Amino acid sequence: MPAEKTVEVALSELRAAVGSLENAVDARIERQRENRDVDNEVRRVHADRARLAQELDQSQFRANRLEEVNREVSRRLVTAMETIRAVLDR
Image 1 (cartoon, one colour):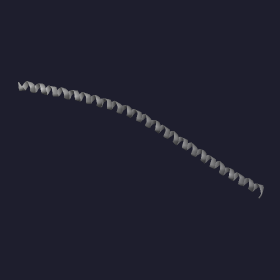
Image 2 (cartoon, rainbow, N blue to C red):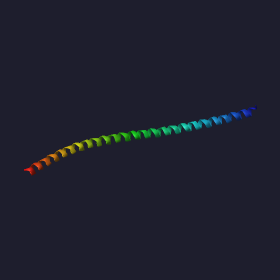
Image 3 (spheres, rainbow, N blue to C red):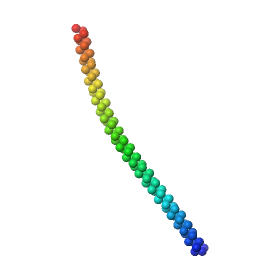
């Protein structure tokens, strides 16, 4: 095989190898970009979860407080009705 053909073949193989390397680098960069996007999304989800957990805790506290107030109002109504019955029965 003449030296000129050998150099051409080597250059062709080198071009193919460089092209493959460029493709691999591009793919790696894209995967890293996607990983960053996923990481950012995970951080947003965790922040949303923490916010929602806090809101749920506040809502549960408020619901418990309303339940306590409701029981107290109910107790007072029963007392008022008994007082009214006692007055009407006289």
